[in-house]
Length: 114
Image (cartoon, rainbow, N blue to C red; front, top):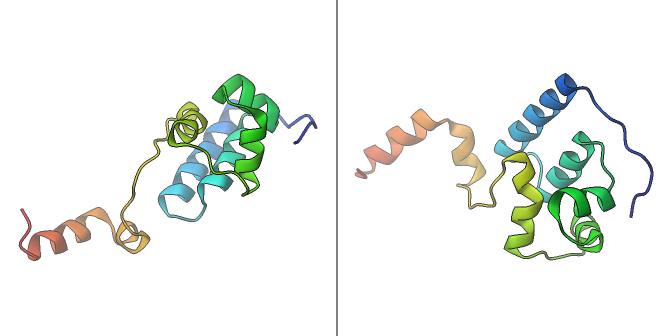
């Protein structure tokens, strides 16, 4: 687990980093493990601090999850994601998300769907 102090960002830098995080998630460019690392870094927190002070989970669980060896419950994933307003959810396939809502909607209706 990390113990080094993390860099603190200005509110403007944090807002830009959050926007980039949300865009990368929406585009499917990062997975949930990378998103978790980035959320923590935006706040300037170690794994231990984010786990205990923000997500209210065991630091070991967060460490294992970020490193790919853990398999957290849905409730744990929600605790990790909720401070950033994120939801644990199913998403349509990436090719569909990248098409744009209008184009995808038109195709859906053309296929005879309401």
